Length: 329
Image (cartoon, rainbow, N blue to C red; front, side, top):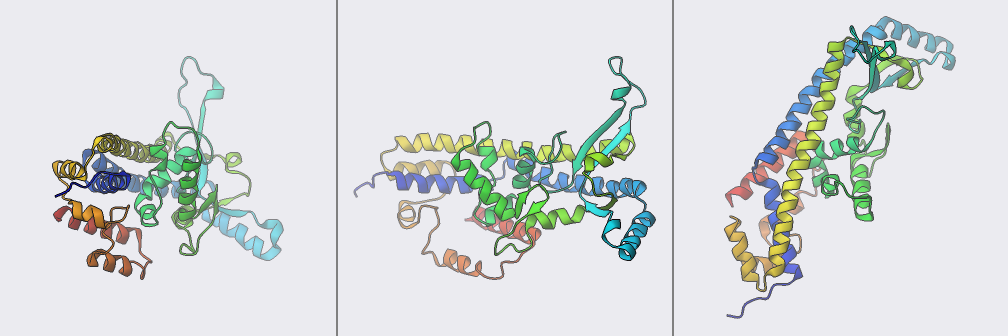
């Protein structure tokens, strides 16, 4: 029987099939990433419950209600109550270090509870905000055929059209435009970013920027807020390590496949990696690695075109069910 020669299309099919397997494989890197998501959810809950207490001390409910009442009576000139999700929290050090003076006594930092809120000590959004948003909403972005791993894959590289294209697609899918501004596409009328951020708005008095209304807290409370940033940073780190691992595997696969002359060698490689695949399957699938004429896959694709409104938990449950079936097959 004549051997089928390897070509670029077959190499891409094998590589895509392997990457799909690698993303579902239960590895230490993937498990650490999934655990970091669970941990940041807990950190968000703890930090925001505390934020409600701290903010209400600075702006008591009765004062907020009075201001709202006066606005109803006197109109726009007394419109001084606003909602915000970011705050400057500050505490005073009890003791100064030898190399510090009174100017160093007050410690303040910007904390943004939004999905794109920065992780570092700087103000407003930066790249860490997008890194967290993409890593945290990875399943939702994958479901929209976006690349949530683009920043991890391009880590350390200069901006380029490929990177920009995927960043723009991710932001559009998440319904994010710029700091505290949202957009939406046709199937994302509310927007995932707006929906996420809406959980964390609190009433404040004063319409100026948050830097000019620093809110006092204790050192312990400040440290709880810092723990949220640390948990978000851990999501970024764990996601980066997981994607780095997959990218290294992809590179090794590309190098090996490039050297192969026959399709059978690629099939043998996949078999050695514990992935069942045969030449006939590779010949009849499209370049994404999906068997397009397989009745089960086609039926699943058609069913997925309806009843598309699902919660994040439902999407994750469906993906876990799919991965379980794939591991059996």
